[in-house]
Image (cartoon, rainbow, N blue to C red; front, side, top):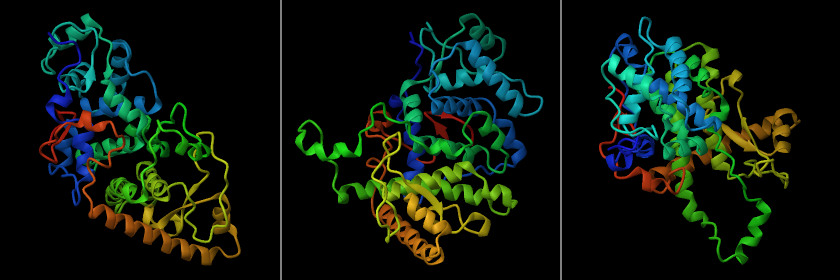
Amino acid sequence: MMDGSAVSPVRRGRGIAGVLLQEIARPGSRPRLPTRPARHRRRRLAGPRFTLLWAIGRAHRGEPRLLSWGETEEAVRVLLKRHGMRGERPRPDYPVAALHRAGLWSLPGVAGDVPTAHGDSGLRSWFADNQPVGGLIEPVYDLLNRSGEARLAVIDQLLCRFFDGLEYEELLADVGLYDDGVAEDAAAEDPPHPQDRADRADRSEEPEEPEESERWPVEAARYERLCRIVEHREAENHGKRATRTVRNPIRSASARAAVLSRSQGRCENPHCTGQPTDVTDARLPIIEVDHVVGLALGGRDHPMQMVALCPNCHAVKTRGSTREALRAVLLAVAAERHAALSRSAEETQPFRAAMPSGDLDEYVGDVQGGGTTAVGGVALGE
């Protein structure tokens, strides 16, 4: 008898992090895009993919993981009516059943097997009679809640594989995933203050921070993954009108996250006279990401043309009398640091070492068949 948690993705060996992050972490890899004409792909976009994006948005906002069937049914029905194919019946029971059978959707308290995600009246009646409480399984929810990088990886894979050539902006906006904050990690409940680092040497129970030589390959791999997302979105926008080329929060959020990761919380102006010692409410360095060449002037929304600056250096670069000379220096710094991290990523095997969280190995399992069109084991189509 099943306990409502369905088949574990760990046992399947195809965790959501494993299948999707493997594609990005593997050197030289590129997602295989669909080759069917858009009119055929459109028929396969509803259901599990829309429901999964909706659930990712809820995890991103930190909303309760589990919802009553009535709340889930209403939300998914509205989403399918608004974005599904014209004439398609909005069937919330089908995508939830599909995700459950794949091991991504938890239905705690359900006794016996959940019907397969096929048929019509039987499946509908089962959900109406049981009114199950459900949501993403806890490991997936926790990952997507705390890791901006994981959210970006999943969203990018779904867009590349199933929305190629189609409009998706309104859908992502409706589920709360089309803004620059999508790349932000959830704040720790009690984040360490930088001043605490000086005391760590006296605390035998706390591990020392890794040496620069040990941390560099991990940061390089993370940087490479984020740059891949930026470049996927750049390629998608090629040839489109300027307003859409400039405004793509998924690309912008990925580029910003990459630059912040690269900077390690330090101003990237080599002539910086000292950034603030104070920190933000989240106890992070006061640092700002800036486009060295403005997008309106033909600059790229890409880390190779972006830098992290302290507020003072940012002001000098924007309106100081030496701004033109500083911009030339910063453009060279951005290009040099981008090239260095890219070379480091190519020389390492980043998959295991560079996961967004150290506890993912247990969940990922042994991933087989890179490029599989699946999320946590659920086949989402060619």
